[in-house]
Image 1 (cartoon, rainbow, N blue to C red):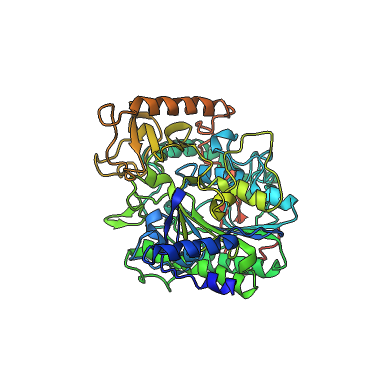
Image 2 (tube, rainbow, N blue to C red):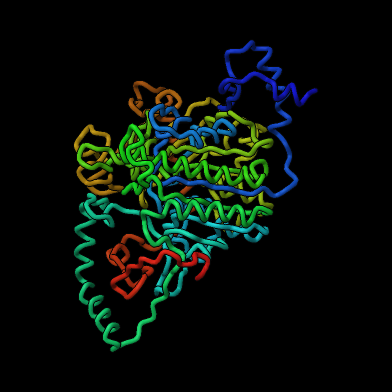
Length: 556
């Protein structure tokens, strides 16, 4: 009788609960809500005696305002919305950085990326490596963007297979407009000039090397990486096929599958089937295609009977790309009510992202959590579920989210979160436990171009330092619990606690900086220079192109 009553509790939408949780519907009598909540507690607190499969779905450049479950009613995302209905939705899920590579580095290692030495060297311990040690079969399908080689084309020091993944099928770098004909450049205009200068200085050397090899004057070994998609236009179908195949092959588990979508990064490669189908041009088409891919992967879990034994997690690596435009056509995402976007570390629009967890029978369905959480938390969470332990020889910034997700605690473990742009600390948030206030102090903010537009359209991306940023003394202060759009900065006159809050945040910054290890300069002239000899090469260098259709992705 009792299970039937539990499943029969009326629920048409989320009910806001204490501590930033919600579940159920506020339209029913109070006593019935309390009764249903009481009866369903044991189900959401279920203990787990087995190692679950882990499915991670990470979008690229997706704005928090692009999904139906986050308030968008013009882009169709039924499959991601289904995840939200069947699981836990996080409304304050924060990326560690507003750009792809540093955000993903922090995501994989559970610590602020400034704590690493650049890229993912062998001494970094990813969650995949820990899960591998715990008996999981680990796979990465899609975008890597953490580097491939260190000193030569053959060392593969940054390769996923050297960072805990048993299987990799995807793209080692990232999609860019610059690699597509008739697309506007995506690289910052100033940086592009520097890159062009440094590239010219090595062009003669590269050409000489190529001629020498072609004429057999010297012998050069080129190791071909043959598990990459051959054509960008076919990448979506190829990666989807591999994701489904991975689930089928490893259905007896446990497995960890990280599906790292190329969607919805420019140049928005979209199949003909989805072109023109959305109300938001090519970007909307691309989002809807990604949603279909999510649905196909979820269908594979259903088909193999793995849904209830799999923790599924969906997120984006950072906020939407506001400056991505083709004339008057917007090619980037929408960040809802939040100011800023990609490359803007302080403003919420650059770092607040979708975050959804589903695990039927273990996590409560149709639940909303407003507490601050981080993409870095996935590290400690999956490590805990896999029976492993996080490294003890370094500071781990991610936290195990299971108590918060299951509702056994009401508050996040994150008191302070630090928002970096490059090596520069732009902002800090303080989740004040005793008051419910959510303070955010901005030490630096980008200067929008043109002024007042909310983005850096003239340069293509907002800079992290230099003349393109404004320094604030004292910092700009907001209370996100009252002003989530960061529209009205507080002052001594409007906020009695102004000095107290700033002093507390300054102290946290000083303490945080003591945990950081000095790292080599990654943005020196040499390091930002294009190094074609370190990149994978199909065919004869420098004419790296291949049109093969049937290369075995499991080789190499």
